[in-house]
Image (tube, rainbow, N blue to C red; front, side):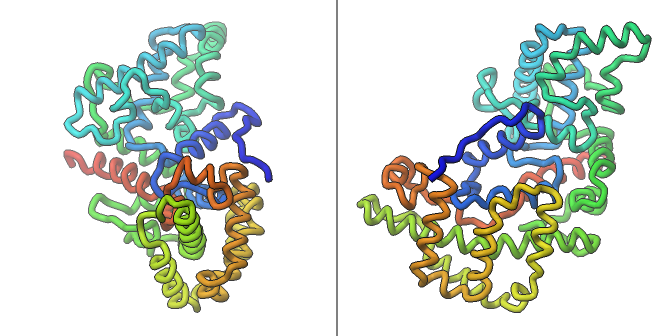
Length: 398
């Protein structure tokens, strides 16, 4: 069976960001992906909430990172020294946030400080492009590598500071930013982020949340937020497809953990914590109670929505279609069918190769923990925090 690996097809920031997020998912509770469904989860997330990723924490980083890279131009840092200086400024930002913030939650690098490997610049670079805040078409490395060239060209043509074109309309860096600061947005900063995100992502659910949401509104899932009922037909359809997909494939994750628990018990390690079989039975009841809605679900439209944004979701279509037929047609069979269980085992082996826990005792011994088994939320926790930051900033001192 093939073993999954991460391969760099090119070095564009969009592709690097996807790999970073895939790697980061291993550290996120409920985000482990033994059955290869993450590509669909992430595509829905990109459709609904473009520019926001699982490894982002707070909205003000959409400004803190540009201020770091804007400072490289103001200090006339050379390309040769650019990466070193950018790192110094990012570390200084961590220290300034630690000094100025009473609440440390959300500060990237708060534990490791100067030793932080995954700095905010890397985490937010893709989102900065998606929201139209960054107009430079390239990676952080490419940005630094072209510092000297941009200055020479600007001097020859007499054009204004090239950085102004790359970060148009960026609010001014606050005085003393790198000495002490917080993650709270000032009203003018919040207005800038809201306007940029809404302009860049017209028609998205994210735009609706930024335009019509408020600090008093919350939802346990994207489809339960109060503004969901005000969405356009297209966004409502996206939310419906995401919701039905999430509930339907929840059973696959639960069944996976039932089998894993049984295998661990056979190994003499004891089963998993948590009664996944009871949860699977509860899922069956949920599917049966929603039978009419699931059977009316136009799954051809599901794939049109997904493939229109990310054609690579096709790699998961055969398995997903097979699962949906069984989960919707006869969810009780999922609990009792040995053949469905074998198909789950084969699917993980195809996705994970030698790291497949259901078929490899050594893999189970190395990490005897549950794998996923939670309802997909499509980055909702990060979305609520970032959108909430922007609304709080807009309402601050109002």
